[in-house]
Length: 259
Image (cartoon, rainbow, N blue to C red; front, side, top):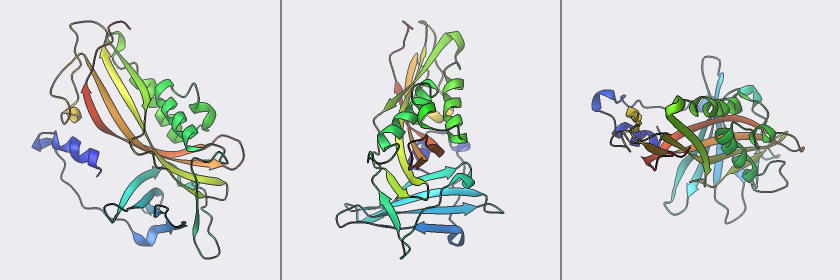
């Protein structure tokens, strides 16, 4: 359960809250990938854990050291839609992985390009850059589906607009693979819902109660998401392998009556 989940649960009536269940990962079904790092670099490592009767479900975890707090933290956890698409992480003769600079232009799609593309999947349905940067994977199609289904949810009585935002967590983590790089990163986008005429109101869902007190003409929601992409070494489209989003803020906004 993430911090966003705890916040959302706190806003629900007690009867609607689901009991917290302890969880753990099967270490026998988990592979660790520890990169060699230079002095002064943030220490981190990745893990791929598998679950299911035939280990058919995969999740990529990233643990990073918080030097200020002097503790290790899980900074990313992303489910892979199709574990068969997960590229092989290369290891050196000593068993270490190779960390790559996710912002380097030596990658066919640096982190700035990846973030712009996932933001575009939500904002335009991938029409500007999303469909050019990414192949048509399940994760990309799910992001585009969110755009396509949500922008029309109010019919003629309201509008919905998605907008990319500066990432709350700008750090990205990349490991060398047999096909290029595996990049784990975060992106942030907003969703602005508005009625189209005075006198109309939007009734927030019960999951919004942690942030919103009641109905209003417009709201802006902020979502923080974790994404994972396989970036090829050759200049061709990358593959978005999985993503997950959590609402991290919601507030009243100015309605767009002019639209």
